[in-house]
Length: 266
Image (tube, rainbow, N blue to C red; front, top):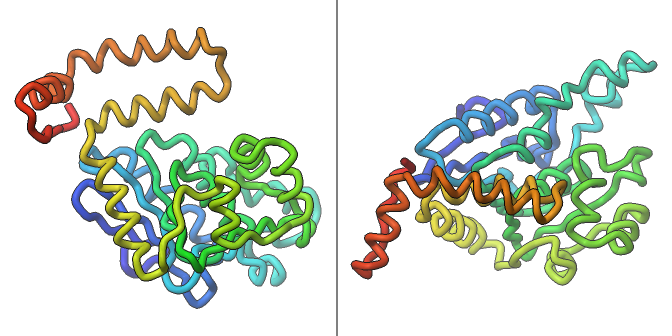
């Protein structure tokens, strides 16, 4: 896919998805929306992929939606009237929705600025490792819109209501250290170390039993809308088939033999 605006590379069991419009700071074009969703679905279906890592080409992670396209009336948000406002979005298959519903764990290698839509995409990943040059910009209200791609759901759950309200209402830009302090990123590393650090974490996750990792993520996601009792019940139903997998047998055997397990995903 080297000729597209979304690149897909694979290293071991880690799929690396790269936003590839560096000349535009990886601003999301209309064309990119479909490509991004397709690549994410492809990764989720591929049994050889255990972790998805998302990053940007060049200096930035993602500058948000392509406002130049919108201003010219040919991109996202282009045109006028109610029909134009609703006809350009397929919310069910939009990248933030697809990203949220992935069973494969996602790691964001936040290599630079993430503004608006780009900030929502970063927050939609399970884990964020940030370059010391990275920043998150909740610039929605400064552009006359709102966090349209998951931010209104994600921010209160990550930050709590009051701090999320402060960040979203002010449209504030947060530098890497501020993001770490608030808990928006898991770790901040020197820029030249980011690819290696993010890949090392992704590989560490990929070394574990993939069916168990995916079941854990699925149950964590469901827990956001369930009572404790309902989630415990669903976890038990997930546990029963895991007991019958080859990976469970390998996990027990490797523990008793004091060696690293070799999981097959079955």
